[in-house]
Image (cartoon, rainbow over all chains, first blue to last red):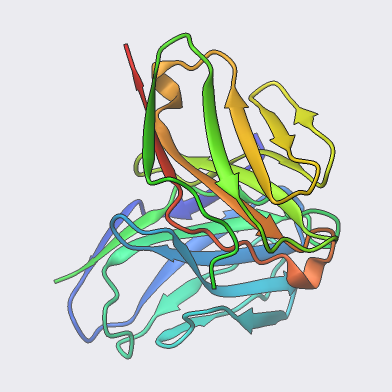
Length: 113
Length: 113
Protein backbone atom coordinates (compact mmCIF):
# COMPACT_ATOMS: atom_id res chain seq x y z
CA UNK A 1 0.00 0.00 0.00
CA UNK A 2 1.39 3.38 -0.99
CA UNK A 3 0.94 6.37 1.21
CA UNK A 4 2.25 8.74 3.82
CA UNK A 5 2.81 7.81 7.41
CA UNK A 6 3.29 10.09 10.35
CA UNK A 7 4.30 9.02 13.79
CA UNK A 8 3.38 9.20 16.51
CA UNK A 9 -0.31 10.14 16.31
CA UNK A 10 -0.20 11.87 19.69
CA UNK A 11 2.88 13.39 21.24
CA UNK A 12 3.41 15.12 24.55
CA UNK A 13 6.48 17.08 25.52
CA UNK A 14 7.58 19.31 28.29
CA UNK A 15 8.11 22.97 27.66
CA UNK A 16 11.69 23.73 26.62
CA UNK A 17 12.33 20.37 24.91
CA UNK A 18 12.93 19.81 21.24
CA UNK A 19 10.84 17.11 19.56
CA UNK A 20 11.03 15.53 16.11
CA UNK A 21 7.96 14.48 14.13
CA UNK A 22 8.37 11.74 11.58
CA UNK A 23 7.01 11.76 8.02
CA UNK A 24 7.66 8.96 5.53
CA UNK A 25 6.22 8.39 2.04
CA UNK A 26 6.54 5.51 -0.39
CA UNK A 27 4.82 7.25 -3.29
CA UNK A 28 8.12 8.18 -4.97
CA UNK A 29 7.10 11.84 -4.72
CA UNK A 30 9.74 14.52 -5.11
CA UNK A 31 8.00 17.23 -3.07
CA UNK A 32 7.11 17.13 0.63
CA UNK A 33 5.48 19.66 2.92
CA UNK A 34 4.80 20.37 6.58
CA UNK A 35 1.72 22.25 7.75
CA UNK A 36 0.46 23.34 11.11
CA UNK A 37 -3.24 23.53 12.00
CA UNK A 38 -4.70 25.24 15.06
CA UNK A 39 -8.27 24.64 16.27
CA UNK A 40 -10.87 26.07 13.91
CA UNK A 41 -8.23 27.34 11.52
CA UNK A 42 -6.91 26.40 8.12
CA UNK A 43 -3.49 24.92 7.44
CA UNK A 44 -0.35 27.05 7.49
CA UNK A 45 2.79 26.03 5.64
CA UNK A 46 5.90 25.57 7.79
CA UNK A 47 8.52 24.17 5.38
CA UNK A 48 8.54 22.48 2.01
CA UNK A 49 11.04 20.55 -0.03
CA UNK A 50 10.94 20.15 -3.80
CA UNK A 51 13.86 17.73 -3.99
CA UNK A 52 16.28 15.80 -1.80
CA UNK A 53 18.82 17.92 0.08
CA UNK A 54 16.86 21.11 -0.57
CA UNK A 55 14.08 22.81 1.37
CA UNK A 56 12.52 26.25 1.73
CA UNK A 57 10.79 28.12 4.53
CA UNK A 58 7.05 28.44 4.38
CA UNK A 59 4.93 31.09 6.03
CA UNK A 60 5.64 30.19 9.67
CA UNK A 61 9.10 28.58 9.78
CA UNK A 62 10.36 30.28 12.95
CA UNK A 63 11.03 27.79 15.71
CA UNK A 64 11.06 24.80 13.36
CA UNK A 65 13.75 22.94 11.43
CA UNK A 66 13.69 20.20 8.79
CA UNK A 67 16.02 17.93 6.84
CA UNK A 68 15.61 16.06 3.55
CA UNK A 69 18.41 13.54 3.36
CA UNK A 70 16.28 10.90 1.69
CA UNK A 71 13.48 11.19 -0.85
CA UNK A 72 11.14 9.19 1.38
CA UNK A 73 11.65 11.11 4.60
CA UNK A 74 11.05 14.70 5.73
CA UNK A 75 11.30 14.96 9.54
CA UNK A 76 10.23 18.14 11.33
CA UNK A 77 11.86 19.30 14.56
CA UNK A 78 9.87 21.58 16.80
CA UNK A 79 12.46 23.47 18.80
CA UNK A 80 12.18 25.15 22.16
CA UNK A 81 12.22 28.45 20.28
CA UNK A 82 8.70 27.81 18.98
CA UNK A 83 6.53 29.84 21.34
CA UNK A 84 3.22 28.06 20.80
CA UNK A 85 4.01 24.54 19.63
CA UNK A 86 0.77 22.85 20.67
CA UNK A 87 -1.02 22.10 17.38
CA UNK A 88 -1.97 19.47 14.83
CA UNK A 89 0.91 18.87 12.39
CA UNK A 90 0.29 17.54 8.91
CA UNK A 91 2.79 16.24 6.40
CA UNK A 92 2.04 16.01 2.68
CA UNK A 93 3.74 15.03 -0.53
CA UNK A 94 3.21 15.63 -4.23
CA UNK A 95 4.78 14.51 -7.48
CA UNK A 96 6.30 17.96 -7.62
CA UNK A 97 6.73 19.74 -10.84
CA UNK A 98 3.68 18.39 -12.63
CA UNK A 99 0.98 18.45 -10.02
CA UNK A 100 -0.35 20.41 -7.07
CA UNK A 101 -2.34 17.39 -5.88
CA UNK A 102 -0.98 16.85 -2.42
CA UNK A 103 -1.40 13.63 -0.47
CA UNK A 104 -1.64 14.08 3.28
CA UNK A 105 -0.65 11.91 6.18
CA UNK A 106 -2.92 11.30 9.19
CA UNK A 107 -1.26 14.01 11.27
CA UNK A 108 0.48 14.24 14.64
CA UNK A 109 -1.18 16.07 17.50
CA UNK A 110 1.52 17.69 19.63
CA UNK A 111 0.73 18.92 23.12
CA UNK A 112 3.26 20.85 25.16
CA UNK A 113 2.72 20.51 28.88
CA UNK B 1 -4.14 38.02 1.27
CA UNK B 2 -7.06 35.64 0.74
CA UNK B 3 -7.45 34.46 -2.83
CA UNK B 4 -10.76 32.70 -2.21
CA UNK B 5 -13.94 33.46 -0.28
CA UNK B 6 -16.25 30.76 1.01
CA UNK B 7 -19.29 30.82 3.31
CA UNK B 8 -18.54 29.63 6.81
CA UNK B 9 -20.97 26.73 6.82
CA UNK B 10 -23.89 25.06 5.12
CA UNK B 11 -25.95 21.94 5.49
CA UNK B 12 -27.87 19.61 3.25
CA UNK B 13 -30.04 16.53 3.56
CA UNK B 14 -28.59 13.09 3.03
CA UNK B 15 -29.11 11.90 -0.54
CA UNK B 16 -29.50 15.41 -1.93
CA UNK B 17 -26.91 17.33 -3.92
CA UNK B 18 -24.58 19.60 -1.97
CA UNK B 19 -23.50 22.71 -3.89
CA UNK B 20 -20.53 24.45 -2.30
CA UNK B 21 -19.75 27.92 -3.67
CA UNK B 22 -16.40 29.68 -3.87
CA UNK B 23 -15.45 33.15 -5.07
CA UNK B 24 -12.01 33.79 -6.55
CA UNK B 25 -12.43 37.10 -8.33
CA UNK B 26 -8.66 37.83 -8.53
CA UNK B 27 -7.71 34.52 -10.12
CA UNK B 28 -5.11 34.87 -12.86
CA UNK B 29 -5.01 33.10 -16.20
CA UNK B 30 -2.65 30.28 -15.25
CA UNK B 31 -4.10 29.55 -11.81
CA UNK B 32 -6.10 26.41 -11.10
CA UNK B 33 -9.00 25.94 -8.71
CA UNK B 34 -8.48 23.05 -6.29
CA UNK B 35 -10.87 21.52 -3.80
CA UNK B 36 -9.81 19.51 -0.78
CA UNK B 37 -11.82 18.29 2.19
CA UNK B 38 -10.85 17.48 5.74
CA UNK B 39 -12.83 15.14 7.92
CA UNK B 40 -12.43 15.89 11.60
CA UNK B 41 -8.93 15.16 12.96
CA UNK B 42 -7.70 13.67 9.69
CA UNK B 43 -5.42 14.97 6.95
CA UNK B 44 -7.03 16.80 4.03
CA UNK B 45 -8.05 14.77 0.99
CA UNK B 46 -7.82 15.96 -2.60
CA UNK B 47 -11.18 16.06 -4.39
CA UNK B 48 -10.85 17.71 -7.77
CA UNK B 49 -9.25 20.58 -9.65
CA UNK B 50 -9.83 22.54 -12.83
CA UNK B 51 -8.58 25.41 -14.94
CA UNK B 52 -11.57 26.63 -16.96
CA UNK B 53 -13.54 23.63 -18.14
CA UNK B 54 -15.99 21.84 -15.89
CA UNK B 55 -14.57 18.68 -14.40
CA UNK B 56 -16.10 15.52 -13.00
CA UNK B 57 -14.66 12.54 -11.21
CA UNK B 58 -15.96 9.76 -9.00
CA UNK B 59 -16.20 12.08 -6.00
CA UNK B 60 -17.60 15.34 -7.31
CA UNK B 61 -18.14 17.82 -10.12
CA UNK B 62 -16.50 21.21 -10.42
CA UNK B 63 -18.33 23.96 -12.25
CA UNK B 64 -16.23 27.04 -13.08
CA UNK B 65 -17.93 30.17 -14.40
CA UNK B 66 -16.92 31.46 -17.80
CA UNK B 67 -15.14 34.48 -16.30
CA UNK B 68 -13.44 32.09 -13.81
CA UNK B 69 -14.28 34.37 -10.91
CA UNK B 70 -16.26 31.74 -9.06
CA UNK B 71 -16.83 28.03 -8.93
CA UNK B 72 -19.11 25.46 -7.35
CA UNK B 73 -18.22 22.04 -6.04
CA UNK B 74 -21.10 19.61 -6.40
CA UNK B 75 -21.46 16.42 -4.39
CA UNK B 76 -24.31 14.79 -6.30
CA UNK B 77 -25.69 12.54 -3.55
CA UNK B 78 -24.38 13.64 -0.17
CA UNK B 79 -23.94 11.05 2.55
CA UNK B 80 -23.28 11.45 6.26
CA UNK B 81 -19.62 10.62 5.57
CA UNK B 82 -19.36 13.76 3.45
CA UNK B 83 -19.64 15.90 6.58
CA UNK B 84 -16.31 17.75 6.57
CA UNK B 85 -14.57 21.07 6.02
CA UNK B 86 -14.18 21.80 2.31
CA UNK B 87 -11.34 24.02 1.12
CA UNK B 88 -11.40 25.93 -2.15
CA UNK B 89 -7.85 26.86 -3.17
CA UNK B 90 -6.39 28.82 -6.05
CA UNK B 91 -2.89 27.72 -6.99
CA UNK B 92 -0.27 28.43 -9.61
CA UNK B 93 -0.35 24.81 -10.70
CA UNK B 94 2.05 22.80 -12.86
CA UNK B 95 4.96 24.84 -11.57
CA UNK B 96 6.64 22.75 -8.93
CA UNK B 97 8.40 25.68 -7.37
CA UNK B 98 5.07 27.36 -6.74
CA UNK B 99 3.20 24.34 -5.48
CA UNK B 100 2.20 26.01 -2.27
CA UNK B 101 -1.43 25.52 -1.44
CA UNK B 102 -2.95 28.13 0.87
CA UNK B 103 -5.70 26.62 2.99
CA UNK B 104 -8.15 29.15 4.40
CA UNK B 105 -10.82 28.24 6.94
CA UNK B 106 -12.96 26.50 4.33
CA UNK B 107 -16.67 25.79 4.52
CA UNK B 108 -18.07 23.32 7.01
CA UNK B 109 -20.61 21.05 5.34
CA UNK B 110 -22.98 19.22 7.64
CA UNK B 111 -25.04 16.45 6.08
CA UNK B 112 -28.17 15.72 8.08
CA UNK B 113 -30.03 12.40 8.08
